[in-house]
Length: 517
Image 1 (cartoon, helix red, strand yellow):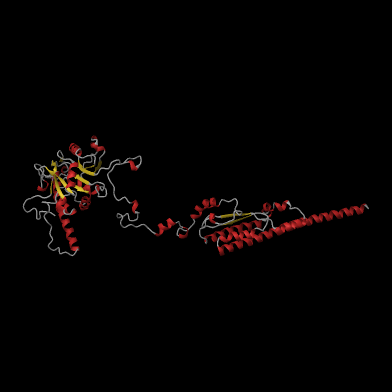
Image 2 (cartoon, helix red, strand yellow; image 1 turned 60 degrees about the vertical axis):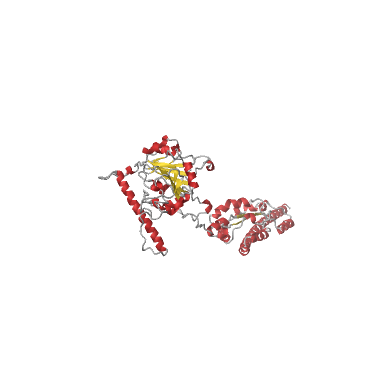
């Protein structure tokens, strides 16, 4: 009996052991089967998703993935799609437990083991090295393949995808899009007009070109072009709009040397605060003028041994002096005891003078009868000269004529005269006979103001800046240059007119250089 009991007990133990091994084998077999089913299902799902993407675009991803993945397994699947045209899409899909698996577990009436519950965490730990390598290679190939798939799609905002809120409960799409869009935009083709903003596309297709802009500024939008400037002084601080509390309407320039400081100081006081004062220093001594209070507000330009017409051509461009109604370009050796600038301009405006000068004291420094002051007269525009000097009473020097020592130009007249000044003819001799070409009718718009008159002192300060030659004083070399420039200017003017008339088809065979052009 004891033997039988022992044998029976041994048989029961062997049977229990075999049953346990059978259960363990079933669990292992069932786990491996589930893994194989999961791998094949996931692979099939990814292939279906990719096919749907290629066929229907990104809009088909949601439906395909949601339908295919809900019954795969009781754990979550993370699906990543990469589209180079914008940020990656990372989707976490919580999947429900398969109903068939639940029914099998209920039929067998066995509880879910800890091994099954934690399967999603232990799966990768149980893989063989070959399986891990296969997973890595598959992942890498999938990323590359997804990258090239994304290239073929237009830009699509993540926030515009109509995904159910249950699919993406914890992902802020706007944050992802904002974080990665800049990175992906660096990889886009600049020539892809589909992904270009409307403003950039407009700039690319329609270049700015405005022929009416100043030369060289045709590529700028007209509203940004500043074609003119001024001599208004500005601060280095504060608001630019508050820099200028008062804008002078007129400009007066003197070409000066330090030896004429007292005379210029007296002359400047004849001009009101409505004038901008501009001094051209031919001797380079600018700091010596700081003793005068007005000099601290004046504009100082210095270049040694240069004339006022050299300065005028380079620093009085019409677009620079455009804010000023009238421009005075005067010598330094003028006496202004009987002159008032504001009264002078009132007479200029009254008589419609575009180019003018004050009358000269008749007893000193007088060259032409036209510039001689006439007593008890406001303005005169014509005169009588020496016999044979005036071929026409309306032409210089009998009319339409002022000298170059103290001319006053309106803004429009100066724009024409500036273009007539020659760069190399620095003394300006002969220019006074050609001023009539800039206004019409010249004999009515060029005149001398008698009621406001000045004295020409005849100080050869600039003439002494010449180079001394054997047997000649410095001023003689300067005078010779002046006379040569007068002849050169006459010839240039006559030739330019002849070329123009010839180009227009006129007969110029009898055209000659007049005595006073």
